[in-house]
Length: 126
Picture 1: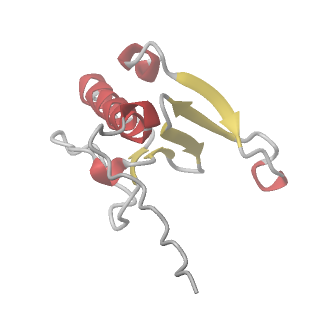
Picture 2: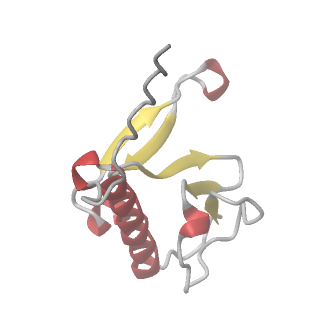
């Protein structure tokens, strides 16, 4: 609910169904790329942000997977109070990062000053 409130265009789906996770799969929230995934463990619910290392986290929500160069996660333990505003801000930042990356990969937005293709050398006549 918090994720959908942060971004009305978010797509929620289940991916990676396999016997090791009882064929339940992993919930994935996306908008122009994966925002985050959710996983449940015995003592924690883990919300992993695909590009979390690139996100500012002024409320210091990230408390897991801090050593990597790409992902960051939030471990929620039973009884934890969720800072909904801070989590929504993090979701919005992840969406902004995804959409800006998608725009930069769009060939229609390529620079008009791109270098021309070099002509191939002509073979020397004999």
